[in-house]
Length: 70
Image 1 (cartoon, helix red, strand yellow):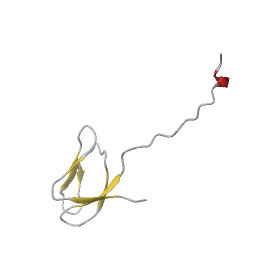
Image 2 (cartoon, rainbow, N blue to C red):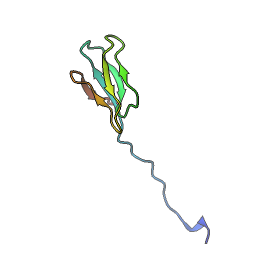
Image 3 (cartoon, one colour):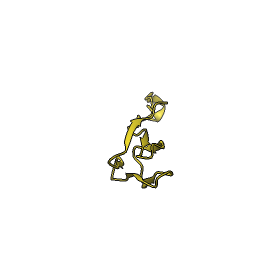
Image 4 (tube, rainbow, N blue to C red):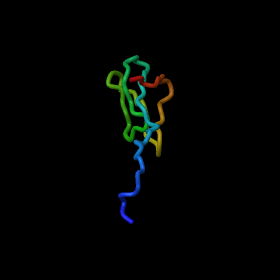
């Protein structure tokens, strides 16, 4: 039997990753991807904002963050 009989709907996957607005001690906001795969450094004070792990990136202590709302 061919594929003509199948009427399956394809659903777009929902991703758990999102953007984070990170505020380092210099208070210069930077947007970081929650699953960043590289080290992210602040442009103003050269502080390391996050370090990659196997899944979600680990934020540096002392940096506050909030979820980015579209």
